Image (cartoon, rainbow, N blue to C red; front, side, top):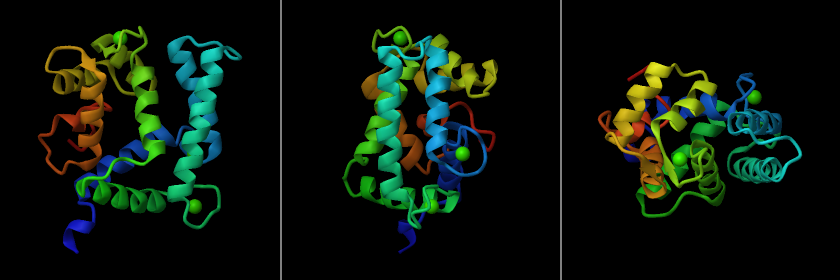
Length: 190
Ligand SMILES: [Ca+2]
Ligand SMILES: [Ca+2]
Ligand SMILES: [Ca+2]
């Protein structure tokens, strides 16, 4: 039974993403409105104009992600995902991944979406400047972004398969020396 539950380190990382990337209005719950705010935030970073094709696509994608997340995580069906519900869902996801299954579809959509957000130039690689632009918009300092990028990239740009591997490492790894721990900036508990 022991390996079914997440370690404190994994929980800290998983909750960090709850607050940093999902709970956009920081009221302690993930709700539909957080995704609406996330569209605005991301489109501002990428200079996508409201009503434009990319903006509408981002809206559509984040809607699907919210519906998927709700289905998996909103156990008491109150249209909100609490920290507890979030951790419970991730306990299952991490267990599935360790037994060779993939991330659920909504998670894969989010990984694709975040890669697109990080690759502002659209050349299928994330460079330090792009990474830093995104995470500064999420409130992470420039120095922190720079340190984190060096850790995850080893000094070169990040490709999509590398990004996916880092993403998986962030959520699954219990090793403090894993590069993936730095994918969303240097956590303050590191
Ligand atoms: Ca919220
Ligand atoms: Ca709920
Ligand atoms: Ca790029």
